[in-house]
Length: 142
Image: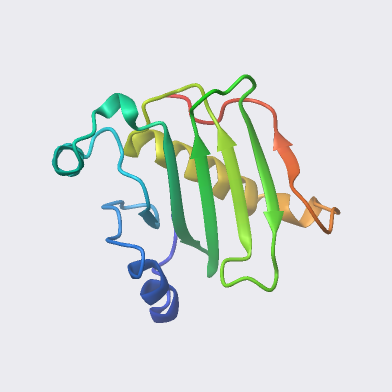
């Protein structure tokens, strides 16, 4: 479970939209999800079109950007990189074949990343620049 974000982090998240209603994580999605029916209707989108989701997330006082892509994926994977000079230094990209993306699927990915961070996965990355592949399987599984 993620602790409540600091006021500074909360203010940052809220510049991108409303927090998702989650008891486990504090995050804001940038793209609509397949189970956000009212929003999809307003945007004239169908649930099947929800194959991409970017989100900003606070975890253990870290600002994190996560991009989940489910379009044209040959091999699901997860990549990680850090940009220390950025306002959001921790960055992940996850590719999945499990679309359309729903809140539950996004939370599965976020939980996997949280577990990886809790286990110190980011401490094992030696690469200074560029993306490091940290997983070569689909983490967005029901």
